Every structure is written in C-alpha cells, then in structure tokens.
Length: 168
Figure 1 (cartoon, helix red, strand yellow):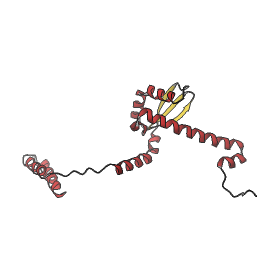
Figure 2: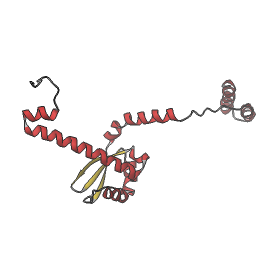
Figure 3: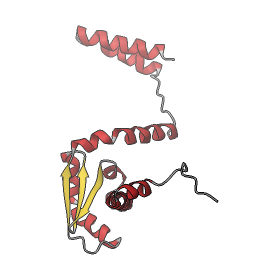
Figure 4: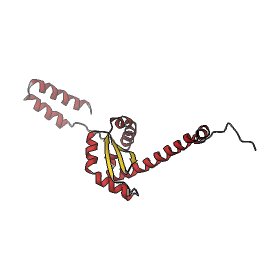
C-alpha cells in the first residue's frame, strides 16, 4: 500500500526533515512544558489555592526553582513560605533543588485574567444567590433617623428608605 503524502504529520517530523535540530528542539520544549505543568501542581499543593492562582512555576534551572508572582504583595507572601515550598518540591523528587527564587512579573497578571474569569464564573454558578431585602421596620427607622440628621444626610436616608420599600 502506498504512503499517503497528504496525510497529517507531526510537527516534529516535518521540522526534523527540514533541519534535525528543529525537531529535537520542539520535542524538548514540549517535554519542558509538561514538566513545568506537573511542578505547578506541586506548587498548588504547597501554597494553597489562593496563592496558587496568583503565581506560577516559571522555570527550574541550575538547582533553582523560579516562581513568577503577579504582584509584589504575592511575592512577599511567597518569600515567607519559601522553605515550605522548597520542602514540598524536594518531597516530590527534586532533591537537587537548593533554592527558590521569587520574581515579580506584571505580565503574568495580564495573562491570568482569562483563567481567573473562568474560575469566577464557575464559582458564581455554584453558589446560591444571596438576595437581601430591607424590612419595613428598617425603612421606618431610617426615616426616624433622617428627622434629626443634617439636610444633606437627611435626603439620602429618605431615598434609601424609599428604595428599600420599592424593592418588595
């Protein structure tokens, strides 16, 4: 059976035919990306969900784990727990890791809003909506307070009481 020359081919195969170095480079990039994704899971377990949303594993190079934080505040919090992070990564098999470097990258915060927005939509759909209504007693109390308040505050309190009554 003849080989179909129009059949889809792997990118590494095509680039490997053009230049053998390109194919191996793309394979290396893919392996590095998968490795960093698995290390991100370790970071998530070490720092907790709130901090994990605001930082990512940028690289592991020369015995140093480089973590990219979205802001200086997040970087400071990560610096406080640096040794816990190092211990968690060593327990996961990176025994040659000797330091954790925290870098601040505002660009990371710009890349994250899409993922954060998706998480917020998912969270909002899971939570029941909490609708509060002002009681008649509260509206009446606001009007009583407004009688003895300065004129500018008096108008605002009366409008708030009327707004609470209209919501029902």
